[in-house]
Length: 369
Ligand code: NAD
Ligand code: DAU
Image (cartoon, rainbow, N blue to C red; front, side):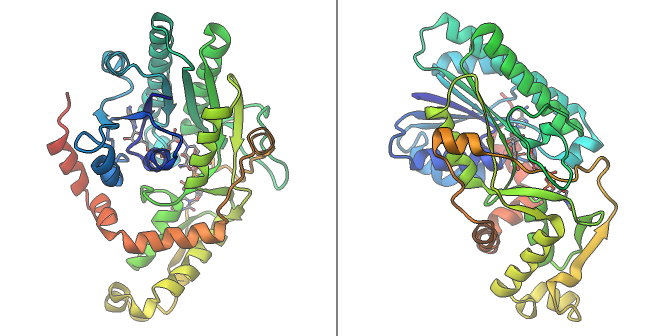
């Protein structure tokens, strides 16, 4: 791993992964972060990395603003940087957005992945690159929806239900096809719901934390009994690191937190943690706007359900545990408390993302090339 191309490195999991990678003592390579900077990409998540490892620091971290659908731009980066490892996070990632407007999901998740595969195949067959690897980050949502029992295994047939998961499923099939047809060295991981620092506040956990702090309604879809399996983002990063170093080429690994919770349980727990860390009686926004509210839980509001809302996800991650000796290390309770604490301490990041100022900042600092 000399020159690692991380796509979508300015997003939630990608930025956490870059932090994680530079903390690994046995990683001495360079990182090229390739990101289009959509609404979900935020370079402020990587300010400390840029300072230490960027052009003015050790010179091991470089950011390129580019769209993975732009073949020529990606090809030029591949060639000039002699990329030997691709870790492909870039995607449109939010299910609700895919329901309202699927087009970007088809472009980025399918065409963008195809471009990267095709460029990797061409470059790695033209040049002699030792130990090249294309690692594709995917989701448990490709397996569909479970009833009250059972698990998703690596060989569970695909049954995607939303435009997001259908596009991810399509990209997974392309990745596997490039392995079987062209021998492209690939690995693939399908992971459950992540949470933690730097998550865009459209996803359940950061949305609930921030709405609660501002005294806004806490929207729970339908009966709130849909189940997700939660994984602290740093544990996802350690799983990816184990796969790219020791995973068998051509294989898929499921990654999960073994922490199934109903949505209503998650929302209630966030309210309790908030009360412990930032009691509602000391919250000036709520005290000013609505002093009658005595408990964050009073803000919980059941709203119309998501169309085609998958009932339950539960991932079986025995393969990665046995083969690569990986385990989730952060309990849901600890991870959630840490995430709430992070949100209370990182108001600059949050306010910037929420206010829309960030998009203006990007346009000013990163003009399209
Ligand atoms: P995110 O939405 O926070 O970040 C996505 C990043 O990709 C952003 O920085 C965005 O600017 C970039 N991007 C989007 N379109 C692009 C394009 N055309 N070209 C270049 N960059 C582009 O997403 P996330 O939650 O960090 O998810 C990362 C990956 O992990 C995705 O592939 C997602 O499917 C997968 N995943 C996410 C979860 C989860 O719980 N969040 C769980 C399992 C798998
Ligand atoms: O399972 C992995 C997937 O997890 C990833 O592939 C996706 O990129 C990621 O967005 C996530 O998808 P979900 O749809 O599960 O995550 P979301 O945070 O949007 O919703 C989690 C659950 O909470 C889901 O059952 C819907 C519900 N929900 C969500 C929101 C935003 C609510 O009840 N209210 C809300 O406001």
